[in-house]
Length: 594
Image (cartoon, rainbow, N blue to C red; front, side, top):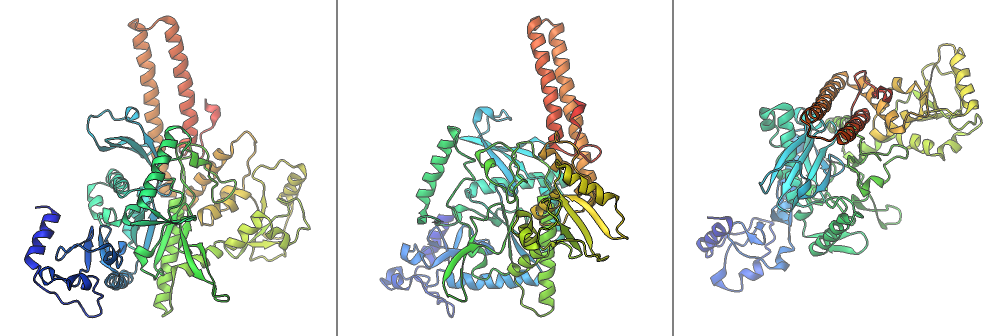
């Protein structure tokens, strides 16, 4: 007996039974129930499934259904609850979360935790007659392949995703929900990939322990809402959204579109299905700020306006494969992931450290009898990201020793300092409790700037703490919402031939070694395994060529051509390795090794 049959049988058994509504409950079907005594049924209709009361089987009209909505916080992605009852249940759920001393963490999927790309059937790596499967196709880069009847797609997990999820499970500080602009079926497949990765990294037993964190009930998708806001036209129906998605898929087939699961331009995400009004315990991590808006009222003019949600913690967008979306600007200039080889990223690890601080300060305020809200704490922590005992000096960067603080604040770097709380100094004032950092270009071309650097390095400042650091220290610290260690940024780039991307790899790998040596060593071990695997593949190709030559399977000119191809492929493998992971010494492998 399926669900609908069970509902109809329940309807027949109870259609003469009148269940009085609970006190204060709005009765949505009261008018319909009174039309005829032969259909007099349950008057409460608290929960609906596809417009049908789950208790008595009554089918509600469209007008009656307007009083119902889904409440994701109650794990009601498929069931709609009467607004009054649902709101009460949400408030109870929040109290339960706070009794457990947790916050609610809402995680975007695409370009935050993963990057995906569509794959045609003929291009799938796994040759199988099955209509659907999920398979790991690259254990070193954490790439999965998902096949569906019409095609498939590849899923690249963001670096340190498994570690991120496990730490959240172990700490028990957050109740996680996943939010996607894709379909519910798509989101469920991605959660299944997460399960497989956790099982691969930590075993089946850990996967069972993390079951509540990796359940489909934690998913919010565009299918969980009947209508969608359109930033330009007010609202967008499901039919309009499907048409837009179809057009984007067609554009992608012609090579002019982006990733069809991601590029939904007018989809606005909201905490309303989770928070029910009070958003004080919710943190959002997403790579896009334009999809998270909230309406607030100006206390002075009483006018309402839209702004980016203050619950949002922006994370740099993660792109692995080449798509049109790679050309989108990153959160900060200079730090842009424009190459498909970029696969060493600390965002999840360092954003986790930030939200841990949010959690701890939230409950510290609660314990002190204060009213706490995540929005205020995020704003305060962001404004105080840097140590107040550090003062940044910009006279070398701007090559102007007379530049005032007000002029510096008008520059991009000055604005970053203002947003994230880094002290700006016009000159050293001799305070021995301060650390003075001369912020300079990562690669100094100007002779006058280099002369100033040499002068500072050779001077005696009576035990004052003074360092010259790369501008990347400021950029990357703001990029990751984390004050990175100064030590890796003291040594400036010595050659213009070193690419910007490779330089960033170098700096963040050294930063990870300072922040978490254990995780750094684990990553180095993974890199060594990856190198050995690549070497085995190269040797296998060489042996295959030699065997074909001995068996006279190839003409001489074909052998020469194939050998040249192998040599070129070997070179490309080494180049890719330079960009893929950390080198054995903790830095990027030298391209001169080629």
